[in-house]
Amino acid sequence: MSRSIDLAVIPGDGIGQEVVTQGLKVLNAVLPQDVKLETKEYDLGARRWHRTGETLPDAELEALRGHDAILLGAIGDPSVPSGVLERGLLLKLRFAFDHFINLRPSKLFPNTATPLAGRPEIDFVVVREGTEGPYTGNGGSLRTGTEHEVATEVSVNTAYGVERVVRDAFARAAARPRKKLTLVHKNNVLVHAGHLWKNTFDKVAAEFPEVTTDYLHVDAATIFFVTQPERFDVIVTDNLFGDILTDLAAAVTGGIGLAASGNINPTGAFPSMFEPVHGTAPDIAGQGKADPTATILSVALLLRHLGYESEAVRIEEAVSADLAERDGQSARTTDEIGDALAVRVAS
Ligand SMILES: NC(=O)C1=CN([C@@H]2O[C@H](COP(=O)(O)OP(=O)(O)OC[C@H]3O[C@@H](n4cnc5c(N)ncnc54)[C@H](O)[C@@H]3O)[C@@H](O)[C@H]2O)C=CC1
Ligand SMILES: CC(C)CC(=O)C(=O)O
Ligand SMILES: [Mg+2]
Image (cartoon, rainbow, N blue to C red; front, side, top):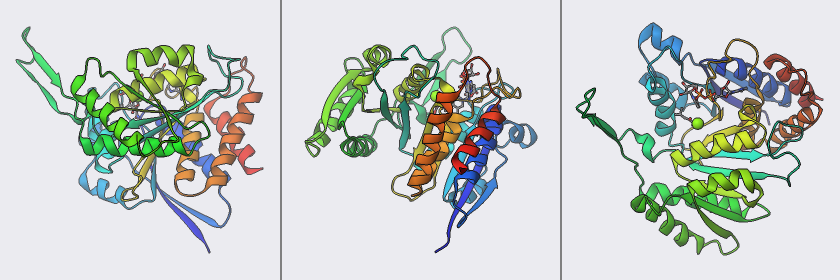
């Protein structure tokens, strides 16, 4: 039986284009010959906005809906007012395709620049809620631009939204060897949202007696990410806390250039979208300095999501082997890292 993958590609801005090129290179190299890969690139991001004023027109949203999955580089550029593309394109996609699971694995790879080198193996997954919290745009400002301006950004947490992400996180924890799930929130201060999360967590916990549970306030969690990261197995948290914690997780496990993510709709009703955790890195864009590994590992998550488990593992093993041999003294270019990983997964 012939197999196929119909992939939408949104390179986006800054280093997005550079890292996506390498992701596709590795994807082409790892796929068996009987898998037909079709890609369609979407011109969305800063250039499009400057040209037409559009962020994500309805026709393109509809076209994206028809693909098996989406590979995205990163969105956002200093030449565009902050928030226009992040909200009007990236978050619009996550919300429209109901990407309620934002999956962000963190693993300590060998030979990486980390304050935690030499520590026991670190291997945890953050399950970040992807469609609610303070990212929904529920806010506004009064007396804008005056010294009496008042701005709000309300965090939206629904019982439905919290329960489905918590349930997914319990299922992921139950499927892992350590079977441990930590809820991270701030329910000592954010009592309304925090109690909804904690009560939901406790209710769903009763259905998963094999999973050990734990609760941490987000400020304390940041301490343990640095001092005791091995205590974590699966973490479930809201959209904002998950965003912040996963940059920290990346920094302590080898750098932001290695951190992969998947915006997943587990029901399959919409295409899931895979992207590095990092942004468009305007400070290094166009210089061949971006590490494409995060995007390449995101391709592994994409393949696993589509049922290509052995190909996903091949990419992850290639990254591990590549990092083990990387020479910290002579930094390789974006292209060189992509080439090296393409060769490894093909052999
Ligand atoms: N998913 C997305 O599309 C995201 C977009 N952004 C957007 O990206 C733009 C820049 O955001 P920043 O806050 O500066 O975060 P950033 O993640 O783009 O950069 C933070 C730091 O990490 C470095 N870095 C990032 N990716 C790297 C890579 N692959 N290899 C080596 N170094 C890397 C950058 O050079 C910079 O020093 C903004 O417009 C922001 O809104 C930010 C985060 C996620
Ligand atoms: C740019 C934001 C909308 C997203 C972000 O920082 C993230 O998802 O990590
Ligand atoms: Mg972020």
